[in-house]
Length: 201
Image 1 (cartoon, rainbow, N blue to C red):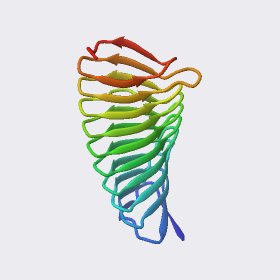
Image 2: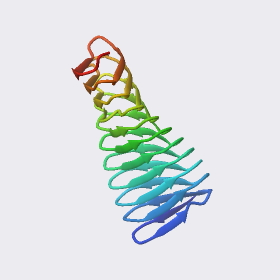
Image 3: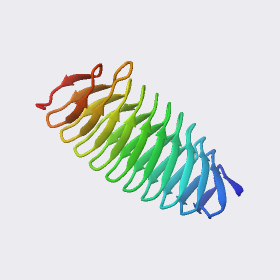
Image 4: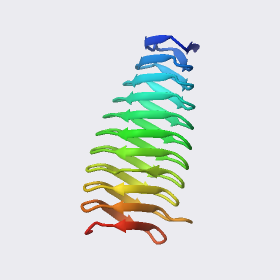
């Protein structure tokens, strides 16, 4: 597979199947399409859209992906990497230490938020699968869902209509902060904590 480097001042409209891309130093790729593979986005590199069948393996160190669309996949968001919007049918597999996903929108999904990883907003129809030890989700909004919070995972602000499925504990316990009126936490296991629960549930 041929590797193409897109760097400072270079703008690529779309990826081609059978090529692997590295986007760095301010380089821009507008569309990662079916069969397109971006190995790394870093150092101010930007990918605007990851679409059906397109894959970005690593976003880190100042790299960003603006939109992950239906069938698009981002595998790892690492230290200093940012994914702006996970749209309907878009998937982010793992958010690692220092990685940030800003918005999980309707039909978007983030599978795992690990120690030091962060999801800022889960909107109506957006889903976060599991928040692990040290991972954090900041706002579960009306219609947003976090399925599992494991030992040491933290949820800040479950808004009215937001749902957290199960808060597990193994050692330190999962923590949920600020469940507002209408917010729901379905199952809280021994050793887990809900702080400032304002719900009537």
